[in-house]
Length: 159
Image 1 (cartoon, rainbow, N blue to C red):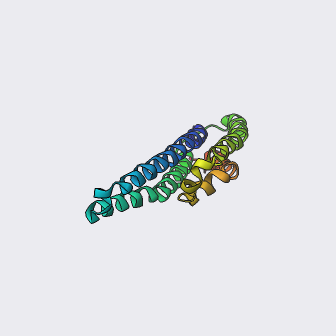
Image 2 (cartoon, one colour):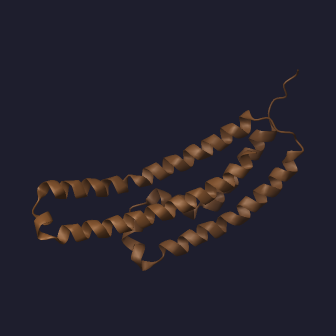
Image 3 (tube, rainbow, N blue to C red):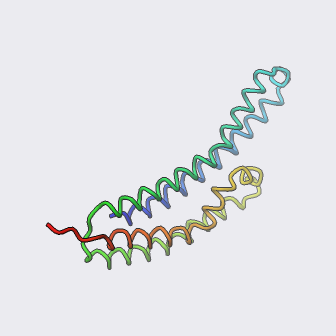
């Protein structure tokens, strides 16, 4: 059932977002320590490499956004392509309630994680991820609602 995938998407996105924020914070700290070493600070090739590494971490915001919306498209397509019996509509509605009930908790947990003053500079590097996590309950409502519609409201094929 594609509706189970929405919960997995929400939880996996939460874990990946936290991991990327922590990795960005750690890499920024390590790169700043490297820049204070006199032999490294004078080496232009090494400084270019450090700047490329930092740019690579900044690209993670778009990578995470593409992963999230690609997964949403996968969920919507799979809910349309797989046949389901109308009996599962009630189960889908109950599961939609569970997903919508859980999403504010996950969004608030991420919000309390990024409110830590340690991560202030890191949070500004991920505006798309922050927007998705702040609007996660609304996004999950739309995704679960569309999943239910696409899984139940299909043209009936005659055999």
